[in-house]
Image 1 (tube, one colour):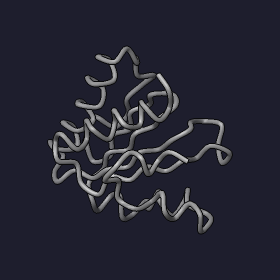
Image 2 (image 1 turned 90 degrees about the horizontal axis):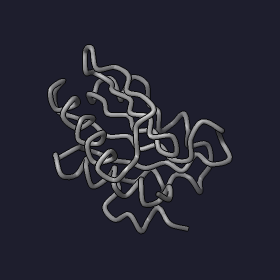
Image 3 (image 1 turned 60 degrees about the vertical axis):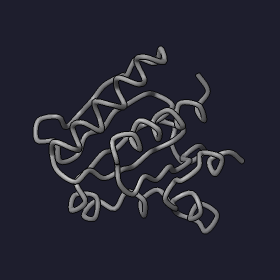
Length: 125
């Protein structure tokens, strides 16, 4: 599955369960760890867990096996590693504290990618 298709699948899974403030950041050329990061907020620890679980289920249904999932103990920040796409689902206060968007967005051209995702076409160049 192409990176863009996987990103679209992740965003759809998050939107289906009412994930909030979903953002996709293209980190190709900035790190060798992954190509895309998707960041979303959940309204409670249960919502964060449900969002992350939904991403895992949808990825498996599409034939993509997650490399790992971290943070499911307290469900304040759950990371789902899908290799080409890394998904961060957080409580708003945790997201504000770590501010991953600022960490990965280092130039003006990347700022557009940090806007809330409403259409996956924005991700395509």
